[in-house]
Amino acid sequence: MRMVPVDEVCYFQATDKYTSVVTRDAELLIRTPLKELLGQLPAERFRQIHRGTIVNLAEVAAATRDESGRLSVRLRNRKESRVFADLFRAQ
Image (cartoon, rainbow, N blue to C red; front, side, top):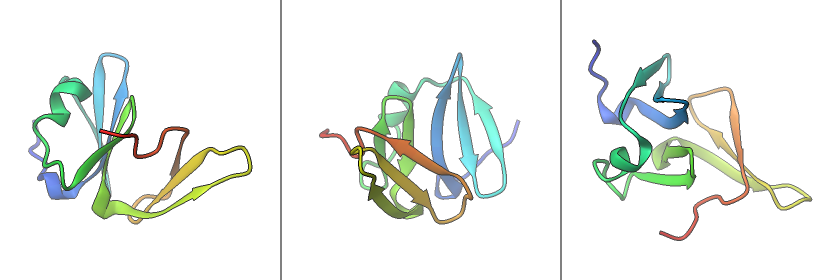
């Protein structure tokens, strides 16, 4: 078991029966569903940008739209980008 301070989380990603907790250097698994997790996170810091992803807004470096209207989020401390059609949906 490892405790991760919420400030270190880049994003949460739903994967099958688990939720991935992605930090700058690691990817860990928890059993808490995103819906339940979202209610426990500070709303001013975390946003659900897709039905399966909650992102730490402090980790967002850029958001861009391609020709087809899909939005991509580039994170400050992770190499991968996340592509979403419903970025920052109305809450």
